[in-house]
Image (cartoon, rainbow, N blue to C red; front, side, top):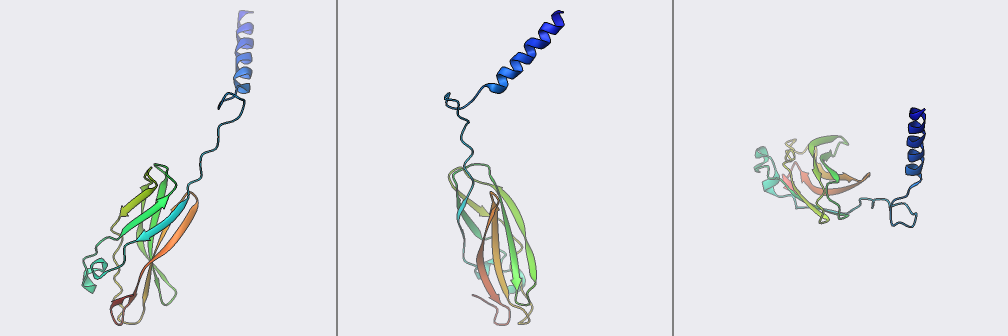
Amino acid sequence: MKLGKLVGSAAALAVLAACSTSGDGAGTAPAPAQPFNIASVSISPMTQANLCASLGGQGQAPTVTIRHTAAAGVPIRLHMQDKLSDGSTFNHHSTRVASDGSGTTTVNHRFLPPCNTTGGRLNSHYQLTVEAGGKSTTVSWGRYNSASRQIR
């Protein structure tokens, strides 16, 4: 009979625990976490130094500055692409970083450097997409004219 009383007491405690509240003590639930938003993304201008060695550059990494909700540790994905003038896309790799609690995260990642050696057959538009908190933002890094070998 003691086992039955013990089981009954445990069940009563479980019911009481399920009815208890947390938060401010007034019976309200805690506030939901603030959604993570990207306010802005900026990227250093494309220069000759960013281009691959075949185009006379050093493959220097761009500097990306992401302004966002002040929350630390939120995963941010950065993806660089070359949107070619024939409609195709060439991936220049991606990286993941964790957000800085200050609300500004700076990234210096060596994406695959711009290296359009088509000699005028195709032109490039390099774009960076930043994804976090279920949202994405795409910014232009620069355009490259392969015939004139000029960055625009």
